[in-house]
Image (cartoon, rainbow, N blue to C red; front, side):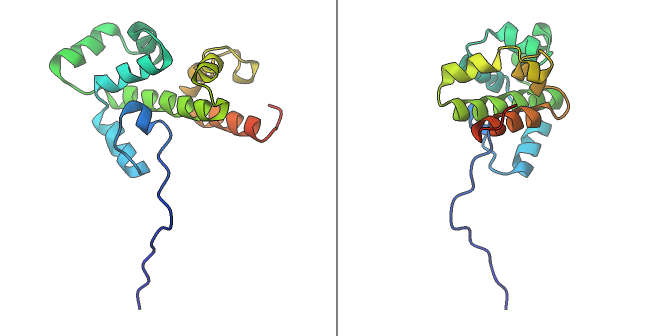
Length: 148
């Protein structure tokens, strides 16, 4: 007799996926999307959400404007590295927006240097190896009243 697992509730969306307009509901799908590279539209969507200029966003993910415009002109996707950086930023952005319950407050928190993050902004820190996980951990601690 074979038992089949049937979920009783929908799988929660991956934080950051909807902000970038990704159709990925599992980590495998997300990994494939990152490997293929996100469209330049995903980067522009992220920039608009945070009220950043294109130049500010490109600087944050360390992508030159000329390279970005070359991708856009040729209809190419961003590199896997740039896509991964962008996903980490989108992920911490969505988690912060959920925690603060206010887009304005979340965005202010994300762009303000914090001692917790070595005097970097949470967005800058999120790009370090393991940084996005740590930013999300800090937000989880705050949510549960743990001084960080």
